[in-house]
Length: 321
Length: 186
Image (cartoon, rainbow over all chains, first blue to last red; front, side, top):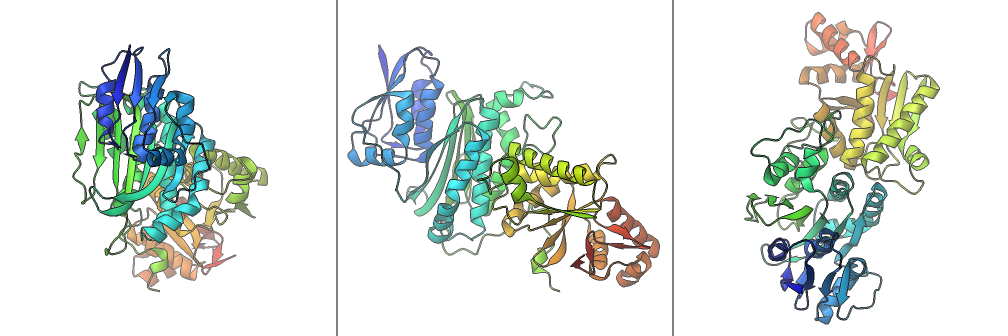
């Protein structure tokens, strides 16, 4: 018998939980079909997380089934994001899949791209650089300095897969109008995998000590808020990537959320009311990260984070003499 | 003797001739290893200039692997002799570099937008001494103490501490910024 899991009509990081709730209780060998026929929209997080569902069920003897969106515009857009190219390798697809074409979608900064090794990170950063300058500076009105920091953030987010997931994952970057919460354009990075997750990654550190409280939520706090890394033992420079991402989103009034295992942490700006930590969620393996940077409207230019090593003194080029 | 190392050339020669972005830890480690090999082969020059002008993007991982770890090696008693001077650092590189300097409590000297500058963790009085040496050096401690209105022994100690951190170097009886005389590259 096949268990049908209904994909919500609008798929983002919040509604993805509905899929996990249906998926988590199922035994590993249960045959499942993801029914996306009635989906009209999906965020980069939604699309990359759907691929992770197949990755998470990789031990199953039969491929996960996937019913393609019936709406032609939706299916066409998903095609332009590169979704079906990867889905065809992971799912047993049902329905009409639009013919694969090169993505010329202006809202797609980076189509869905697999990240397995360090070279993939170089490829992603190199490909996105020119286009991100146009979108971030030109369309979203952000300071020109955002481009380099955006590339760094993307690099560090992708490296989490290479160094901690234990298997590959996917990254996607898109821009769209975030009507629901903000009414402004945003650029969104989604980096998702169904690998070992933060808790197991940190547990593999030689100096790791489990406590009674140790769980996915504490692992996320350690990694995201305290810059703990399994490589910190013997290399004190490790763990700065996520700290850098946090500074980046703080500087541009952005939002960072990371789901791993049974917990989800969110660093929220003033325009969002997400819960800082959600625990006891249905289990989903790996880590799924989303970074949202909003368009700037009528605000003063973003200031450098107070975390700067040179905070309290003028930048060299700002010297008075 | 001085040595100039173009990091962009090292990146393309060591990792991939198509890359101009310094991203990922393995890339940073490979580039740092190649730089250390060059320094060793040349025989530990007095001043080694690490030039970032051909690097488009630098992430935190590479800043840590290259900048922080090179500085930590030079700060080690068993590390290479000589001094590191940085150049070609662009505005976009500052955030990751300053972050790793702060994390490790390090500082570096760089030629930045036409002048020698000090980046990273140095206290205010240390920074004033360093800037005095940059502006008029080579200069002896007594002159610096007169310029800043500090006690000669205090200035001597501060300058010596900066030299120990390889942010200044000895020049006859005084001090100078590595590779520079009166703010100009030698």
